[in-house]
Length: 70
Ligand SMILES: [Zn+2]
Image (cartoon, rainbow, N blue to C red):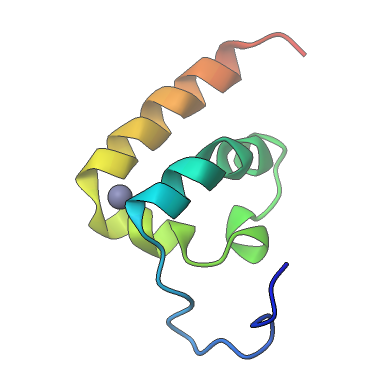
């Protein structure tokens, strides 16, 4: 995914709100698919844990996608 794959420390990359929003739909898709989104999008979970705005966005996106047929 990036040059830094495999080089990241336990804290993962710093993810800002822009990055978070950009990847949030994919994150939710992976979640709903029963996969581990944190393995594909490292750092997002940490960002969501610390950012209420993105957490709310995640919740509404998740509700939206979960409601979609297929
Ligand atoms: Zn955020």
